Length: 431
Image (cartoon, rainbow, N blue to C red; front, side, top):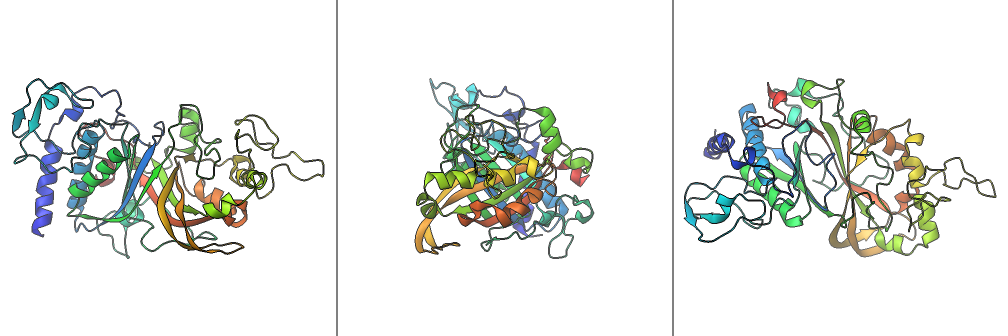
């Protein structure tokens, strides 16, 4: 074993053994609980920012993977409280008269650690508080078997639902922007807090994981009960599974007794990076945009209706006998009524990564510098075979939206149920 891996195993063991304030003190006001029956970042009220990272494992042993997950779990429990990823309690310099800061206990506010003894931390989130940070961990197919090799003795434990996503019509996947052995979704109301969390977890696992691809995203601050708008200007997620409806979540999102024990209470995460030809879209009249979506742009109501949450009038005809909502409109193809009742929990975000040279897929086939922007689609479901795959197979072929969108990144990950204090994420998989 290399010195770096020996150092990692020792450091991870020390971190996991640290009792930490994360288990003892009450949660700060703007913190989301890390431990519980389900992982955070799924049913949690959606935050404004996301930083998503997929990793390749370079660990050579099962023990290294376990040590990594132990270290990540302990660090995540601290980060979601607004604390540094690793305890810095070795030596402190008193700060006379200081008061407690948001996200920190009184002792941490009155004292600052000696830089000579403190654990590494990039420091850009110090004092910012939790900002409702959640960290959701997912296992990709490569954890179980990769290049025909059962690296960690887990091949037989791969869930049947953790399939390889098919290549859908129109997919143009960018090299290196798909899959991954492990994934972490960091969501927060501040982009710096979300990015800081991924930086720290990547640093902790540096000896045994390598970044594969990342994606940052954002949503406008939206009052509870209202639907955010995407970059196309339409409300996004009107017909979503209600995260507060336990019966709907159990039916569509949480894995039940049909799954292996370690996945029960968990969910399957599908991530798709969807580039949108915004320049092309912006040249379209609003009436055509509404026909494409099947909803009114301002209200979000289905075509022909006045209220956003009105049922889709899929059987309604206009005076000429044509469907009010076109057969290839986005909402019709995505609706549960069109997919045998299938539903997924969307937690999508917009992204804007500057500009890049692009050739459009549809007439007038313009080429040139265009916005590298679109939708980072994130969805959770009980089984992707009866969730995302069932819904998207028809959409990929017929959706009017396809003339403006291109799927360029993708991943499917099994997100285990939550952990109790003293456990690590996915622990039951390894026992």
